[in-house]
Image (tube, rainbow, N blue to C red):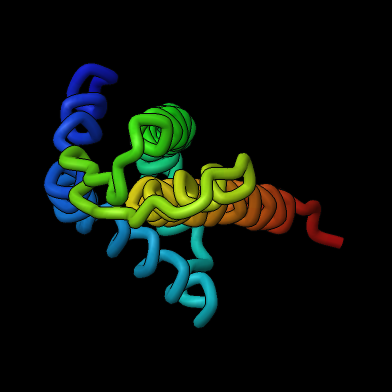
Length: 163
């Protein structure tokens, strides 16, 4: 997926993120499938190891930019919400309503800690998606490393001199 397509999902807010997660469901399932087969020791020959390695590498390359964009959007939105709540409080409003992420926050006493906390709470959607992609990117990375080790060992055993 190209960068501009990733951005379009995040610009839509909650709806776009839901669409993105649905679009990525086959890749999530592939990672889970490979993880299950590795755990059950069902991927042992060169061909199946190479196939799993290619799949995980491709998914890693697909998910890494999404993870990076999700991290950036989380930070951008957190700053936006922080500023918006501060401005709303300075104007004397009693409630801050965010139409982008679709939530309301009652404005009480405005302190830096409260602003940070409410802004963090406001980006929970972005935190959720960032954490999901971070977890799958890490799983791919570990799977790639493990499969590379298994392939090395398989090659070593295959071409070991017979005594």
